[in-house]
Length: 465
Image (cartoon, rainbow, N blue to C red):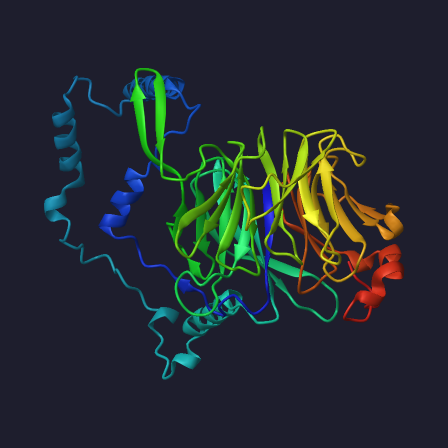
């Protein structure tokens, strides 16, 4: 499944991402100490029992194979020890005479392999390899016109970030592929792209990931084959086990439960907000790697948070306590402004076109079980919603009278994430339970083009998929 998607602005990613150096001995030891390879909670001694059972089954199969071999006359009638069996095997291999070649056997025959080419360009084998290397290099190059999407994905107990390339095309055809992926240790729940220069320079290319763990990992998207995040905010410092009871000691100012929501502040680029199942919101200074503010105004899991586009100090949060709260980060001690809603909050978003408007999706709201919302950054009053009913819908919010103008089943399964692109405002990234990223060119719908086509920076192509 795909649990979250984030667009990377065009031109930010390096054209040729660097390949990470292999981890040092010290880094490997640190990874082991961090518990990345430890068994997760819920994996009990039953797993060990299953392994013992498998071992016994394998032993039975070996015994059965030996019995069959004996019946076929392929083993000695005498019972031999393990050492004797090894000795017999070595005698059969005759390793002492391994290098003595039989002169009657020609090891290297004549044929096309003996041909000499005066130039590498004339050698078809080398030319074919050069062509393959050239194509591989071209696939790994990220052009300034390419769109980049980061997907948080889980499949078969493997957790990873996939970096997708969406090639720009005047024809309107969408060509997209996975550029590289990053293996992460825990089930991802949310992501937030940020450009705070954590490694120097003026701008970075990073993604923050919230997961089932209490920590927030920040990964460098310009590095391939990286095995560790460049920064970890919070997390567990020590695990203890007394009998069947387990306890954890957390790092200073860390969340103590899963991280459910993340929001990067585009104005104050070193600021990242996080929402957690521990009922708390934390404001992090990622440049310093520490938590500056902790907010405790919710009484249940905090599912979603968002900074205001026009007043970047204002933070909106939605919780399972069936409330939405707006607070000013400059005065965190203030109680803020609170709205009660009829069900658990699933997601929320500020309207980028007006300072005082936002939308909230609820577990049992008007559009039932909406799990994701996204405002179009270019066209006012155009809102996308994704739902666990497998549908994505586009809404016209004009005059405070919402009307559905388009709907689509993107074949993504239950939809968990929808997100409009800042660079191509009518491209909508969609992630769901099937684990395959989908991108919908919403202008391909006649109703959307008729109502909002004048906000597009390009003319409508003759045909689009």
